[in-house]
Length: 212
Image 1 (cartoon, rainbow, N blue to C red):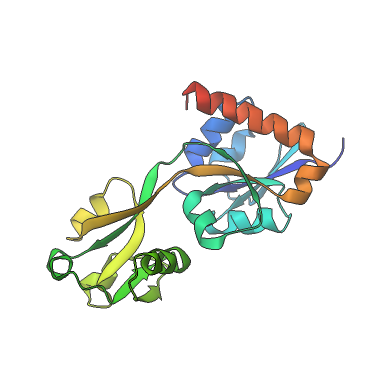
Image 2 (image 1 turned 45 degrees about the vertical axis):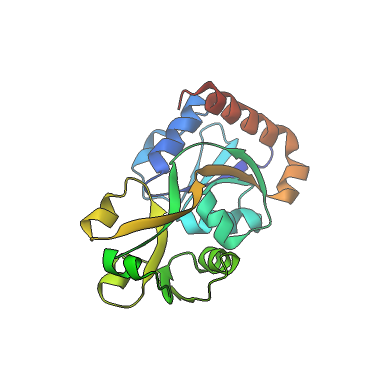
């Protein structure tokens, strides 16, 4: 058998949904898949290889051809703007990218500093609104920034809104909706177009069928 199709999958909160979608699409994932600490796993048939990566790294692996295809959040795609084909909206892990702050700072309407994991997306959004703000990049506990007076607002992923509520923050604006996407390396597509098209078709059948 030739080179396997290499797929980069995001570990974390979206992993279970992603695995379920692949299984529904007819792909036999190894039994050890759901609780393994391995970072690379091959199927018994040898036709698929999986890279289990941090969500922020999936687009990097696909862009540089380490993985042929991958599943990445639209938030990561918008932030990194990788040179990949965005083939299919998988409609998984639905959430949105939002602006939030403390009620008292929201009331005065002043936005000078914004904390976020997504500095490029945030900077572009505020520029489009004609607002000049200082963007402060944080890698975790974004909600802490307004509480300690570091920033006036945050830009972060919101799913249920419970984390904002528990920290006394309120959402003020939605920047965009976020779902998981099936992405493809352009060179890999030229070399493995048949198998990639088959995977996209199988995934699309499940997504459009509404069975995920």
